[in-house]
Length: 220
Ligand SMILES: Nc1ncnc2c1ncn2[C@@H]1O[C@H](COP(=O)(O)OP(=O)(O)O)[C@@H](O)[C@H]1O
Ligand SMILES: [Mg+2]
Image 1: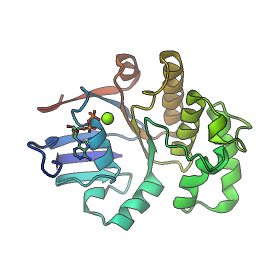
Image 2 (image 1 turned 45 degrees about the vertical axis):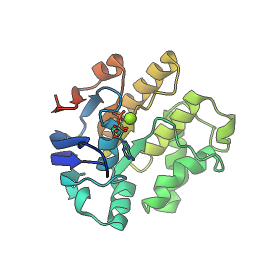
Image 3 (image 1 turned 120 degrees about the vertical axis):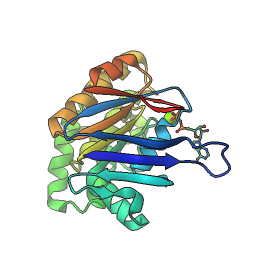
Image 4 (image 1 turned 30 degrees about the vertical axis):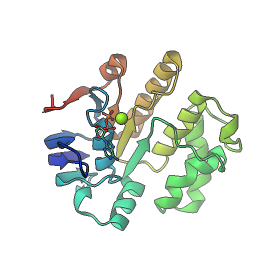
């Protein structure tokens, strides 16, 4: 689902690269934790994988068709994201001017999923994340934990082959964080997607199939 080779990234004017020569893969249905100290480059790596940040060298093969997102132009990267990748951000990124159902619908609209199937898929996913009946609500009326459930439903609604989550429970209290993480892992397993989950929590990492540690010297 994800195969990375010789990946390097340096921000303009930075003294040294964030990482260089990175390589690893995530198999279909495998959930991998990515841990490492703050500032080591975890978010940069996820953003490169999603094509939101440009890599300097290397290859990032994504999905069953093994498209190399490093080599695609902006339009093709957006299309690959829309069909193949689900992203859960730390800060939820739920759009405040759309209802819960409209937020969850965004990947369906971008990914060209047939409109007739949207309502059922959205209702099913909302029920699966414990938000049955929340479709017409406005995000401003939801708690942090509920907002992250919306973000999880949105990341899964288009059945992506690869889920990327960047500290998905970083903004939640520890109990809600554990609950949301368990939910994310359960849903990812049910969908059979591969996943790369960044977290500071040992507990989170131990719930995953495998742990990768990013250090200034590379992956361990
Ligand atoms: N857009 C950017 N421009 C320049 N430097 C950046 C940018 N984003 C991150 N960095 C730098 O890259 C390094 C890795 O950051 P980041 O990927 O956010 O780390 P992590 O997610 O592991 O905390 C840090 O030194 C950070 O300051
Ligand atoms: Mg980060």
